[in-house]
Image (tube, rainbow, N blue to C red; front, side, top):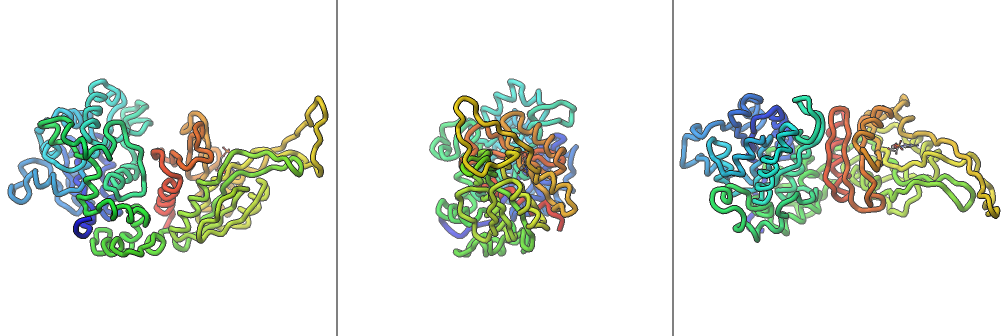
Length: 491
Ligand code: C5P
């Protein structure tokens, strides 16, 4: 690493013209809360949806709207503006804006900046589903990705125009996570999107589109790390310490844009996540994890497949975030995370009792794969094989721990369930959220090798919308969830 870190990271945010532009306000708020600075550029179209005043108030920076308001060419020309940032984010990126970017057109301030920048570019599309699927847009997105622009996949869902499908702007938190990743600041290891992988971009930066488009387009995300003074070594150690997502507590404790506060934390070699970032300090988090075993006889049992890894990772992350954590664990061979109080149980009824004993809690996260049924009676001796006919097994339903908790007078203020599905994952999760009266369902597709694996791709299904995270290590899923728990809790 050359020279001291020059944090906080600087984002140039180009707000295009679409109904999703209002979400850019939330994005500005999030970036600032996480310790970054934002300068906004509003397109003509964008100004029909959000005002320069709103963006200026949120970013605490002047908002630029036309090429001609950059009066002092020597100090604040469009070249300067495009290069002061560590990352250029286009959000929302409309079909029109992406078409211009792909073609190298520069007919207003936003497109001129995009053509002039030598910094990485992240485009966050939002448009009608048919526009997104149109051959012209597909071509433009492909061109942009091949040229090094990180084009996010839009979310799927109902759209403002009444249609349904891909085209919704991803949630601001997901955009922020991508920004942190692009800057090499976050713990989120997002799978590279189609197009060039970040690591390859350095080598191939001169072989992309030549001329106009080539100079317009981002040169790769590794460069972003050096652009903000985080060399490979420094970047790694910061990530080990919890990454910028985890550092936000430091920013919260001090004014979020105070570079002194951030640099102080980053520059401390022994800086531990737990020492500075404790958004769950004073809170009690109750977690269930692993399977339950429902005995048939002394040697046999019924169970669901579950390694317990995701629940244990959430317990570890909650403890790191300062919470008192009770982890009610089914039979798994996993070490107890530091600072976590573990209660080992075997059956669903034991788990239900342990959960009741652990109340009250501020947050309950029911991750366990509880067996739905148990044998009506448990044989005292090993049941013998009986020749031709197997012994009949009569089952009865287990208590639903999550639903019982939801109906209890001691219902935690934030109650979260998990849903492992093999098909129509989000649809089933939404239905489960309502049926079980919980605040969120964390849904994952277990048709692959999630069970027992180290990675997971989850959808956070809340009352309003769905946030889909890309596949990442279970520890990173846990950290992101814990950040969201802390944000969602009433203060
Ligand atoms: O109904 P289903 O088993 O799919 O619901 C999954 C969610 O409900 C998980 O959060 C799981 O921990 C919880 N659950 C429970 N008690 C049960 C069954 C499921 O707490 N008996």
